[in-house]
Structures are given as structure tokens and as C-alpha cells.
Image 1 (tube, rainbow, N blue to C red):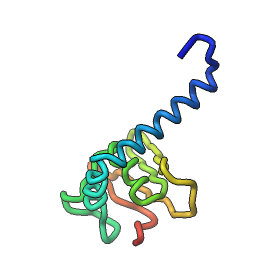
Image 2 (spheres, one colour):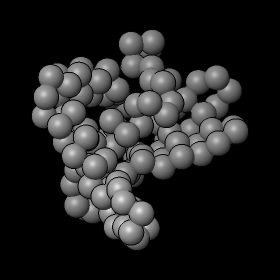
Image 3 (cartoon, rainbow, N blue to C red):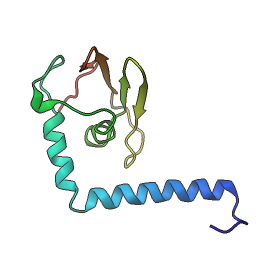
Length: 114
């Protein structure tokens, strides 16, 4: 960007670039990765789950937000973070809350419904 570009345009272009990268990532070979991750993170009920469903925070939260088309809120002992779907408009889907208890994380609040 040239020196004459104002900060607002710079921020807008940065946001557009982020959406472009996300869309190209999702439409390419990586879409099968999202399907696999969706299968991995799906659980039938709230509470502890087996190792096959374990996730790494914060690397899977944004994928959960996209797959389930709802906000994800993570609460840990040392930090908290929120993730919103970036490829859809706001909706009335209830959020997913994830709470870290000790070394394990458990879904809390609304379960993801089919």
C-alpha cells in the first residue's frame, strides 16, 4: 500500500483479504478437512468424550463456528476467546460454550442440535 492510503481503507482491505483466504481455503482441497474435523468434533451429548473427539484450543474453535454456523465461546483458566462464523450472516443459532476444567474441556450450555 502506498503512503497516501488512509488507515480505514487499509483495515477494510485486510478484512476482505481475510475473507478471501477463508473462502479459497474452504472451497479447495481443504473442504474435505472441514468434513473430517466436523465428524471429529461432533458429540451426541454434553460431558466428557473419548480421545477421538478431543480438540486443540484455539485451533478448532473457528472451524466449529463455521461447521455449526453459530458463535463459539471458550473459557479457560488463563484466557477466554470467542469465535464467530465468518462466511455467513448473523443468525439466531444458540452459541456453543466450551469450558476448561482442569486439563479437560467440556461442552456446556446448549448442545449442538441437528
